[in-house]
Structure formats: structure tokens, C-alpha cells
Image 1: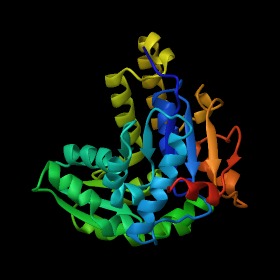
Image 2: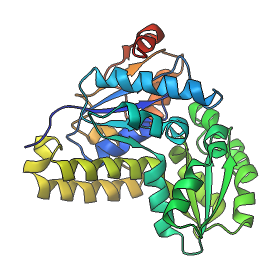
Image 3: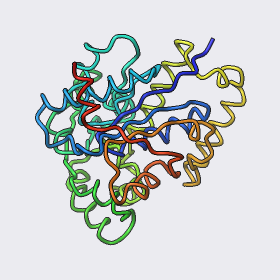
Length: 304
């Protein structure tokens, strides 16, 4: 048993590389094919119809590359189009980033007051609130768009005075609302985790939707027997590696370079921007072994 096919992961840009990083941390043998639609990023300002269309194009592009699972590592698509994708894709499991993060937050919030930060489109959709309230209707959910966080990450401004001021500007209101759990509802935001945690204080738990999405993928593959064969034949050593990786991650030492799957993975983008490599390395924690270009015209062909 086992499945050597890669996991398909897509995002409107490069933020989903934080999901890829967690996959490599939890499942070092797994391969992925990553698609970043960098020519049309961001999706957050688009209409719901356009977001659905772009998401389906991205998904079908990866399906044509024979992936065993689709991870929608884009909070915008996960928020407004995950049901649409699930209706159109039946051959492989489809996982978004919203529900795994919502489940993790709901089980951790003792005071039933959860904050969600993300793009304007993600917060406006109310997707996290709907998912959380489907688990526990008594939980109060407060959303806050943080539009400056993505450009700060992509400029490499991870921990400086400007970043700290921006985090304070957006999050002091959340602290005043009495939340005890905060969902990082954008795949760029885990890069700012240390600054965010120091701003809101240790009383508030941070939930990284990228991490919990990777855990969901791992759970599904174990349940369906579709893990990479090396993982199945080395389950004890894998558990030990996961524990060691968790310790390294907590200490800020984990790098995707430690993963065997990185070198065998493929990374596709629809445009190579000037700061592409530095942003990708910041988000993945490793340099990309190779980059492949897919044109917008090729993506649009998948709409048929």
C-alpha cells in the first residue's frame, strides 16, 4: 500500500508555501506540486465568481499532473469557493485551510472568544465564523482585516519597528475584545508569529491554519493508506522525526532543507516577480530547487 503521487497545493501567490513547509515538516518523504498564480495575485479583491473560476483553473491544472490530493492553501479561495471546488472535483480529496484552523481554534478557546485576522475578502466572507459556529454556536468570533501584513512579509520586514507598529495598530483592538484565541487566517501570517505573539501576549493562543491544514492532510492520507510508502514502512522513525521537527520548529530551527521531499517537488508559478526568490525562501524556509513557468493562458484552458 501507499501512494507515490505528489500532493497538489495551490495559492493565489506564494503564501501557500507556509503550508508546504508544514507538509515537509510533518511528512518529510512526501512530494508536492505547488502552483502559485503570481500573475493574477491577489485574489482577495476579486469578485466571488472570479475567485471560483481562478480556483477551479488552478485545481484542474494540478489534477492534470496526477496529484493524489488537493490542498487549497489560499484563505480567499477556501473562504468563498471550497464548496464549489468540492462539487467539481470528485477524484481526490480537497482540503481548504479554513475548516482545519476553525476546528483547532474552537477546541482551544476556553472563553469562547476567537479572533480571526486575514485579507479583507477572507474576513468579509465570514467563513471562519461560520465554520467555528457550526462546531460551537456559543463562540463569539471577531474578524479583523490586516492588509499591511502581506507586503511586510514580502519585503522581508519580519521584525522591525514598522512591523511592530502595524501589528499593534491592528491587534490591540482584538486584545481589548477579550479574545483568548487568534486564528492567523492568511498563509503569510505565520512568518509574523513571534511579533504577533509578543504583541497580544501569551494569554492569547495563536492558531496557524497552515499547520493544521498539513495535519489534516496527514490524517486523511493515513486513514486512506495514501501516504508515501517510505512513511508507512518507517512509521516509528517518522514519529520520532516529527517530534524532533516540532522541537526544532518551536526553537525556530526547522528548515524545509531538512526534508527529503523538497528536492523531488515541483514549484510552478504564472509569473516570476523581481523579489520572487527571496519571498519564496522566507515563506518556505528553504530555497526552491527549481521553478517552472505556467502561463495564464494555460490556466484558463482548464476552465473548459
